[in-house]
Length: 287
Ligand code: C2E
Ligand code: MG
Ligand code: MG
Ligand code: MG
Image (cartoon, rainbow, N blue to C red; front, top):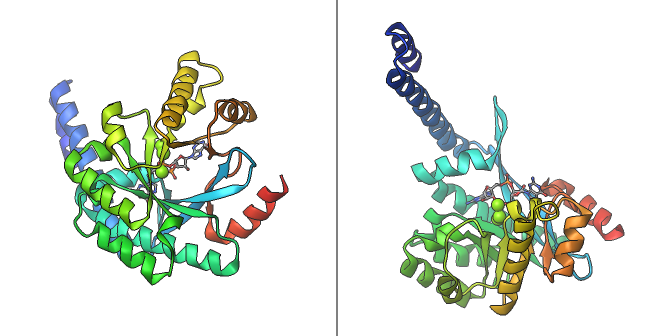
């Protein structure tokens, strides 16, 4: 259909509106296809979790792992979460997918605890849609109980933007999660538009400084200023700061000098499948 539309658009001369419409149509088709495959993938084990270590800035030990979703598509190979999470959000598949992620991350955490190689915490990303879902609280409680985990070893990461959606509702759910003992982190901090007053009203324990500020902090003064100001702000509010996307020693040193609490990035490790976790912690504890 998209091809036909494109053909007609071309046929009728260089009509920009029609070109545009055809391209939009094609995009919609690709999108629908992705949506259909997403639902199918949910029923056929195409998803898996990778884990990226979060390092303690003080002593360089591993203090956590963030679970990151991966989609092994049978024909298209690995599809990035940046590509499919927004689609899953829009079509509602994120609820089922997110429930699976939480269960799987907790299952893995229990397995690591049994093997004596668990980090202190496992961090799981929660989408805006999940935060709006009534069943979230119950599901978190059930997962913790199912794998006999204490709530203290679970961190839920919520983006600044998700926490800003329907604020009263978000605050109520976050408060209830916090009461269960779960830790809460604001993800991609600095990319949203939350006010300091709002931030202060959230029952959060940490801020994750977005990768884009870390990326250029050693070359761009304004990014360096944002990083420094975010760390200072977090400290004032009694929050811990995790820096995302730490790729160089210079970035690490600057962040540590500014008092950043935790570091995460390719400098330490890319996200790895659970099978590679034992080798990874052995390697990191030797550095
Ligand atoms: P995020 O939660 O901010 O996760 C950090 C992202 O930065 C990950 O991308 C990670 O691989 C990447 N990263 C970490 N260190 C570095 C670095 O040093 N350099 C670079 N270039 N990248 C680094 P990933 O795994 O592609 O995930 C992208 C986003 O997709 C996540 O951002 C999160 O928003 C979303 N996502 C991933 N898994 C889930 C999930 O299970 N549920 C939900 N709702 N969202 C998820
Ligand atoms: Mg995250
Ligand atoms: Mg992030
Ligand atoms: Mg990010």
